Image 1 (cartoon, rainbow, N blue to C red):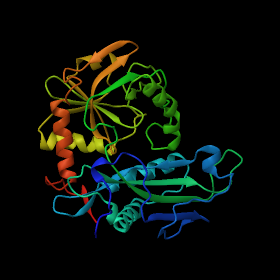
Image 2: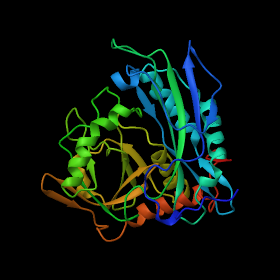
Image 3: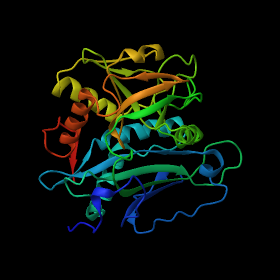
Image 4: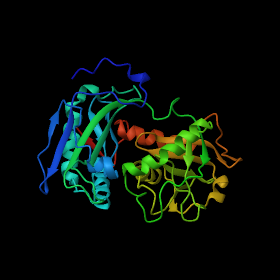
Length: 340
């Protein structure tokens, strides 16, 4: 299929309406078969559960054109599993993983012309999401829901591509202990909006959130997990029950062990320790991995030896290897790549 006439290499990370989206409705205790539609508009009651009590969850994944011209997507089964967990936590009906993956593949297939060409640096971003659609005025779960997937071609998440970022240690909390930090709920991101706007106004690229219980341990940013690299090249990632389990992070840890031969460790990371690391990166579906050059803790600057001019060596090796797997340049572990 011929690609759309788009300046692929200069795409930002924003919404562009594509041809088709997938829609399935839950009513009377069951999901319907779902369908692909041209209609990008949603009509619902003013009293819908999502509007009154933020009953909504979402996922994010990408489709790529590989080196040999195939269209693929990366580990959608894990997105389906995570969405099942999110739904259970917010008392929403589960959209089963197998149906989720099937819907993802159908949606990509229907928008093949929007998948950026190999070598452009862009990808097709997929946003599966679910929300309570029936009227709810008392505080309780909705009885009807809609599951949708739309797509949009995107460029890099951070403007300027792969260059070291500057973060600030936030005075705000991202997630409460025993709260919803470990699921992908819209309410988590709403809570971070004021903090990220404030950070940008102060000249920072992102926030570093600490654990809300003690405010002594590193958790994550508003939209990505942390990866630290020690001076002897060991990979360390923060461990906490209130961190979102990143599919990209899990994949990068496998890349570190099995492709680069590096030791990896998941454990609590005290804020006081971060100055001892050689490199720091943010990882997630949107950014893949973005190097961090400096973290500012209330005026105290913590500068990583990798510096602000060029990305750290290990961060770039991790990023380049994972991208090579996604683009068909390097053989992938079994089950990671789904061909359309």
